[in-house]
Amino acid sequence: NNHAQIMGISFPKMTMDQSLHLLEDVVGQNRKELFYVVTGNPEIVMSCQHDRKLRSIVEEAGLVTADGIGIVMVSRLRGGHLPERVTGCDLLIQLLEKGNRHSWSFYLLGADEPTSRRAAEVIGERYPGVRVAGRHHGYFHKDDEAAIVEDIRAAAPDFLIVALGAPYAENWIHNYKAHLGAKVAIGVGGSLDIVAG
Ligand code: UDP
Image 1 (cartoon, rainbow, N blue to C red):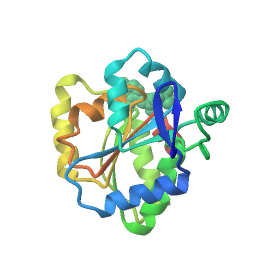
Image 2: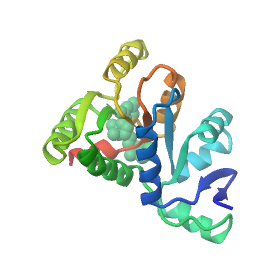
Image 3: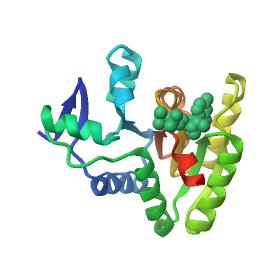
């Protein structure tokens, strides 16, 4: 079996390298539907035990990664071996590295305004081949969401990084998945804070 089951959540047995290859393939294709990635951390797995909507969002994801050593360790005790952890932050950095060579575009959604601005600057300096197609901080009002979705759609990024924390990011992606115009969306937590330094 090529999946590990952890508390009812199915994790594909994929390394970081395999995950990157999969996402590279997705970006190279012209899919009609958004491909979204759930970075499956213990909080998400626990929340799925009582949150049915979140569970269905995770089940519909194109990729669920083992976000954290805890998930990998549990998989070794039961449910089948996961090869290694693939955290949201590591995945983002690897995608920026790869994106630097492939001229990928990224839209950054989330974190506070100074962090968002700084993260875009750092990416511009460190990964000149990457295009930051747009960004928006993550402390918006419900009434602003339509404009943000439109901004993302107009930017049509290869990757939409949704750094709103779990399960806010997963729910947000799911709510707007038909309207985002991105190829891949990834829900992460504090990754932009780390990129911004
Ligand atoms: N955040 C946001 N809007 C919110 C709440 C949080 O943009 O309404 C951002 C916050 O600034 C931080 C990230 O989401 O950058 C949450 O990071 P955290 O590490 O707490 O998330 P987790 O890894 O626990 O999912």
